[in-house]
Image (tube, rainbow over all chains, first blue to last red; front, side, top):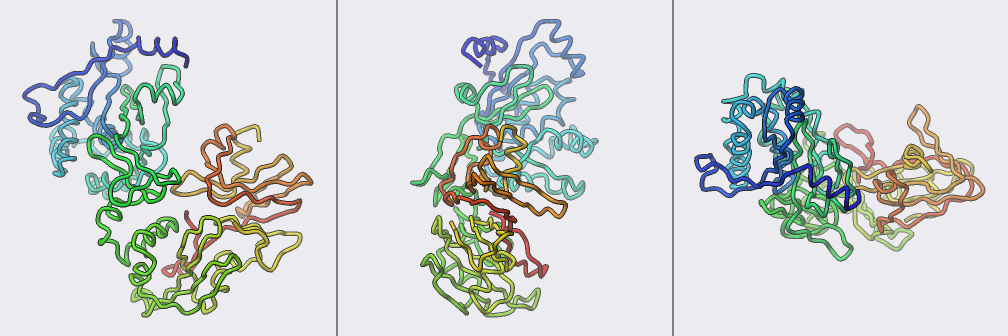
Length: 375
Length: 100
C-alpha cells in the first residue's frame, strides 16, 4: 500500500475516541481501550443492516485495546453480546469489555461471567462452538491459553472445545474490505496485532517494553520480556516463551514441572533458570556414567536415586552439550548404563552421517559408524 | 523452490515453540515422503546445504534467515533418510519426537 492508498484507507474512517458513560461499571476505573467509529452512507448502513441483522448509524469498525490479551478477551466476549449491541448500543458492550478487562488486570478476575450469564447464557455453548472456534487463529499462545482457561475452564471442560489464540508477537494482518497493508504501514498505524470478527476488527497497541539478550532474543530473567501498557506481559528466557511462574516465582519450579514439560528447549530453560546443580538435585538423580564427547564437551548419564512411584522404574537422563550453541540439555532416555548407548538411543540407534540439532540424516548408500558432521 | 509448496516440502523438521526449521536448500534436490511418513532426501551432483533458518520468511517468500544456531551443513551427492531425534517416555515406555 503506497501513501496515497494509505490516505484513502484513512479516509474511510473517522477516528474518534469516545469516553465512557459516567454511570458505567467502569466508574472510577482506567480506560484500557478506545473505539474507532466509521460513519457510512445510508446505502452502506442499509447493506450492513442486512448482513449483520441490526442497524446502526455509527457501527464500530475497529476496537483498539492495549494488549493482545485484552483483544483475546474482547473477541471472546463480543459474540455473546450481539443482542445487547442491537438493543443497547455499542457503549453497553464497550463498558462490559472494559469493565472486565480492568477487573482482570486488577487481579480480581471476576465480573464477566455474571454479566455473560445474565444476558447471554442461554445459548452460551452453541455460540461458543459457532463463533469462537472459528475466528481465533493458529498457534496456541500458551500464556493466553493459561489465563483464558482459568476464566472459561468450566465451560471448556463441559464442551471439550479447543481454542487457538493469536501469538501477540506474530504480525499477521488481514483487513477486511481494504487492501492488505504491508507490515511497515501497519506499524506506522500503531497496530501490533489484530483479530477479525465479522463486523469488527480488534487490534492491539504495541508493547511498551521489549527486552532482549545480547543475541537479540527476547529475554528477561526477573520480569516480563514483553509488556503492554495494561500490564499484560509475556515471559521469555533466551528467546523461548516460558510460563510466568518460572520467571517471577522460580521457587514454584519442582520435579513435577520438569517431568511434565515435553519440550526440550523449555526443560533447558528450567535448567538454566535453576542452574544445572539445582536442576539435577530437583530430579534426585545420581551420575552413573560420564565421558567427553567428540567435540570436547562433557556428556553424562544420570539415573534417579529411587524408583519413580507411578511406574516403579528408575528414570534415566542424558546430559549433553549442543556443539553448535554450547547449550546444555537433558534428554530422557531408556534404561541405560553407557553414556554413548544412551546417546545412540536418541536417534533410534541408527548410524546417522549428519547431525543438525534434532535432525539426523542417515546415508542410505554408505552408513557411517558415527556422525561425520555434527552441528 | 519457486512455490510455497516446494519450500514447505524442503523442511525436514520445525520447532514447536519457536519459528525455526531445518531445511534442505539447493537446486539439485528431491525430497520425498512415503506413506510411513519417512522422508528421503536425494541430493544430486550439485550438492545441497542443510540450513537452520526462520520458517515463516522461508515459507512465505524463500528468504533465508539463519537462526544463529546450527551452522550450515553441506550435503554431498547421495540418498539420505531423515531421522528425527527422539526421547524416552517412561510413562508409555515408548519413544517420542523431541520437541524444541
